[in-house]
Each structure stands twice: as C-alpha cells, then as structure tokens.
Image (cartoon, rainbow, N blue to C red; front, side, top):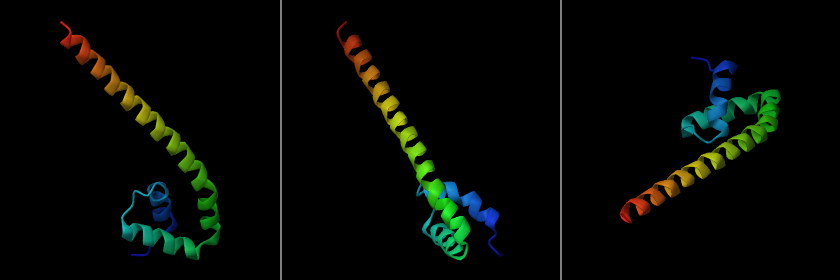
Length: 81
C-alpha cells in the first residue's frame, strides 16, 4: 500500500504531540523528507499546535490539582466531625 498525503495529514496531530509509535514517526519523517512544502507547513504549524496543546495541558493539570485540593479539604472537614 502506498502512503498518501492524506494518511500523513491524519497522523500529523499525533506526530506533533509525540503520541505515535516509532514506526509511524519514521513513516511521517520519511514522507516529510520527500515533500519539502508539507515539511515547511508542519514546521510552522507545529509550533502553534504545540503551544495550544501546552496551554491545554497546563489547564488540565491546574484543574486536576484543584480537584485534589478540594477533595483533601472535604476529607479534612469530614474528619473534624
């Protein structure tokens, strides 16, 4: 089966986040080495996608920490009775 640009475009979000297997990473990188235009687009958009994802992860981490703190406070309040 020939790897098409559509397959690579489907893999790109996962590739940019480091969530693909080693085989998929090699596949994407090999394809990008043969398509300089797409490689440049990925380079430019990769920074933006990663920055958005980083902010999203930071928010998720903050929300998780807040939920843990709330649970700890509920537990402490319950133990005082």
